[in-house]
Length: 596
Image 1 (cartoon, rainbow, N blue to C red):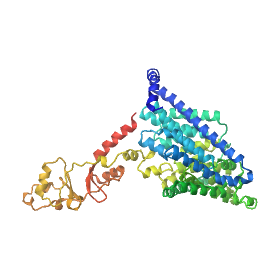
Image 2: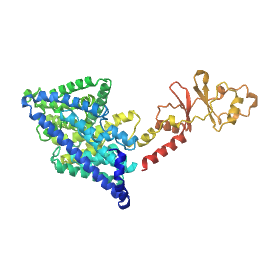
Image 3: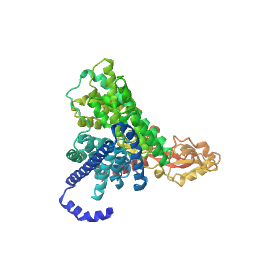
Image 4: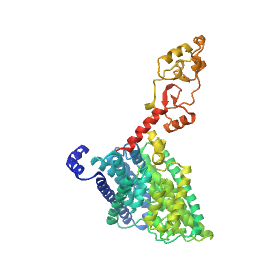
């Protein structure tokens, strides 16, 4: 059924709503509906993935599971590629980045295909051991639910942006049973503002999704009960913040480096074969890399770190060396981002959210175990495991508030709020110094799409230099006489003239300003002897078509210039860019972005 057909069927209901239900109440009702649908989607995905993993492991004898775990990922990746190719036309749009782009550039219109594509592809990938998380696919699905529901129900542009975020919040809240973290994730990752009008629908949608998840899917990802934290450990918390920041920078850079390597190869078959075999090899060496890895995190929280070695090549040596567990943990921590990138790059689907939590947990465990082995200061390894999760998530995703409340909610570690704040804020600030953009927004920023904290840059990025170009400035030739220049002055309203060498392909040589040559205008004796080349000045600066408007504005402010010439790569004159034109179009875009 087409969208127009749905609109016609719903038209009587929508008219009744206009007469009897206020806009605010209607928005609340729709946010509840979106939360309900996002919660159901999360429950379905979690249930199918975990049940399928159980079935795949149940029919293989325990002694052969290490081999089956190495072979399953290539099957899942191959199935995902086939689904993407034959059901989605080869366009899956992995990760949260495309949704951020939809919100920033396309009026929060998320394609309808994302209502199911992320669920199916992530189910196929992760069920068979793909080393990635389910959080990004389910948040994208929730965002698609919010966006398409608002379009069907004829809700305005500004409210559609909010309801898209409501869906993403509901997805995160349901998959972790963490309503506040869901709200903060939507605010920090998708939105750039949080007014009271935004907060209430977000919270209601997130809470609704959490209720659905808790009612239909029993269980919490992690469990931790703690009542206090030692003040003497504050220096260690700050050290952990540094380590998680370094890990975050490492994960972001490796993720995009490996992504570039996969982009060089176009053969789908070879990508699947190489990626599947590489992932299988990684899982064979380090079994914790299989799937999301949350089972390994739960083992650490339960004090069973020795189980990290189970099923690996090092299993027979685990009773002979206390350092073997640390070796496997370090290898798993550093290779998790590689395994995730291989999973996604070879055709699978998943996200870095869960991978960040996994690697952060191992980072916190390694840090705490080393401190305890040194005998310097006895610390709780469980505390540092969850603090490592929060610090790494804050650094990789650039969402410190989400990290704080997510870890506090899913582990029950509310007593750790102060350590959580120290670790996440420190990790976030250090990571942003080295990596200004998160794992979700870096690729968008490279394409000129800026969001959230760079709202001015983002709005200016919506404007095109060539569309703002002013071409009514009258060019003059370098060999024109002063008399010819005066004649040109009389027939134009501009007081700035580009000097163009048409014998050299239209190359810009300089500019002539009416104010600068005013003293020469009254010297009739030199009308035939003075040339334009004698009067022109070098431009204060030049603008290229691919320069950003924000940088251009900053340049104009520093030079106190109201107009700058625009030239192409060969220095051919194209026109002028005016500060007033940029600001006028920025204001128009700002009103459009803030309006309904």
